[in-house]
Length: 215
Image (cartoon, rainbow, N blue to C red; front, side):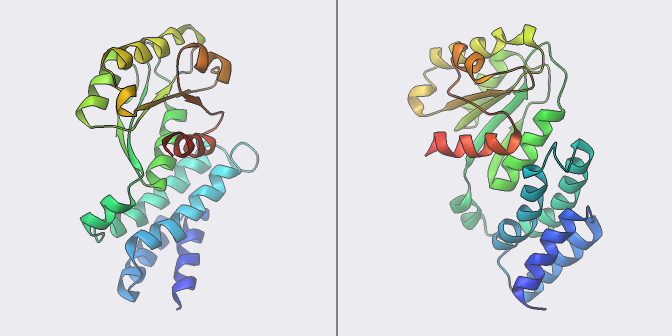
C-alpha cells in the first residue's frame, strides 16, 4: 500500500466511524514510515473536518461523536510516536475551554474540543458550570493563548463579561491571550458587547477564527 493509500484509509476510517480500522491503519502508517503528525493531519483530521464541515446538513451530533471516537482511536496510537520537539514545533497553542457557571450544556463545548485538538491545539477542558475565576486562573497557570467560553443559556451572558474583566485585571490580554465566546444563543454582537475578542457560529468556524486571532 502506498503512503497516499494509507492516508486515504485513515480519512475513510473516520468517515466510516470505524475505530478498529483507524487503529490498524495507524499502526500500518507507523510501520511504513509515515510521520505520525502527517498521518494525523493528512489522514484522520481530513475525515473529521469533512464531517464537521457538513455538520447540521448531512451529519449530526451523534455522527460527530462517533467520528471523534474513530479519530482518537487512531490519533492516540500515532501521538505516542511523535517526537516531543516535533509536537512542540507543530503545536498551534494552548486553549482553556469550558461552559460558564450556571450552565451544564456541554455538547457544543465537546465538539469544539474535538476540532481544536485535531487542529493541533492543547486543550485544557474545564467541563461545565465553571466559575469565571477558574477560566482565568487556568489560563495563567498554563500560559494559554486562548480562552474559549461556551454559553448555551442567554441568562448567563454576563459571565462572558466577568471572565473578560478578570482577564483584564490580570493583564492577560497584554500577554496576547485572546478570548472567544460562542454557543447557541450567543451572537457576534453579544460576544463583542461582553468584551470578547472573537465569536463563531459553529465549531469549525471557531477553529478558523482562533487561528486568525492568533496570527
